[in-house]
Image (tube, rainbow, N blue to C red; front, side):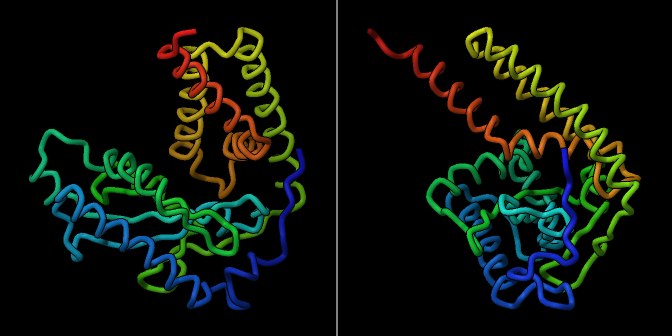
Length: 245
């Protein structure tokens, strides 16, 4: 498994000083605020402008290992105290992501053919610092880097490639087991849940490295189209329960 590091960030997105181009920054902010307005109007969730602590760009698009399939990941950092008081029995942070899936079905947002993916983080969440302050992180509101991108030595890249290859092969073997068993819905859900849990665990615990091998292996698995195949099979299996033949 080869990991290609570029000399510069994507020059369509970032200028020669590694700052977002104004039109890119403005568009990302417009998308973020459009979704916040949607939440306010559609679900009457009390999110004030002052509750928005920051709007961050993170993920592979802020890294030197970006590729053609890299999304532009945006995280809206919120103080959800007001919203949680309004809906004490609702997990607001998770609901924001669920509502976003519906919103994104209608609003297909892209910048230079890169998809935009919105994420949400309660600033009071205990894992906030561990996940979103690892970097590289760019603040759209402050128009500056929170943590700048860094390069890796040839040896670091080689070690990362070796570790990621082992993990990728294990993921692929697990996928093939699910395939051999006919893509049973319970096995698809278990497999997908394990992938999400592994990625989350690696981001929360492997905080010393800017890039970790679990993240890279899962990223390749996704880019190779296996996640899409799993989702399509899951939809097919779920639909079969409601079809008379």
